[in-house]
Length: 158
Image (cartoon, rainbow, N blue to C red):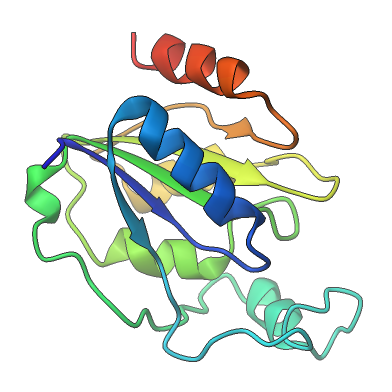
């Protein structure tokens, strides 16, 4: 087992591919953050103000339930958390994940995928949820080569 974990939430599959590449590069365990109720295509329609994702993102206190937990979170020192960017921040299921464990003394490194938006205030929000963790500045991984990913991963751990 590694002392590093790559945990990720996916909507379309892009984030999963990035998470798997990153885990291989840094020799980390992998965990998929799965909602109890999976998101349908209609749920993810950000152009529809009544879609599930739109409703969740309008209410910062929404916490979608997660289907599985990690029994040995205390074994990880560094947790990389991946997700698609929704409305310039992490989806609220990421907040559910972070609030489910004690991240005191751990390092959290966010990474994201997006069709066009940046990470916005993601780092600040994650720090407010995990005040006793070290939150590193995240990175967008849209069409990034393996070498670029490797260079960033090693640089951020210094």
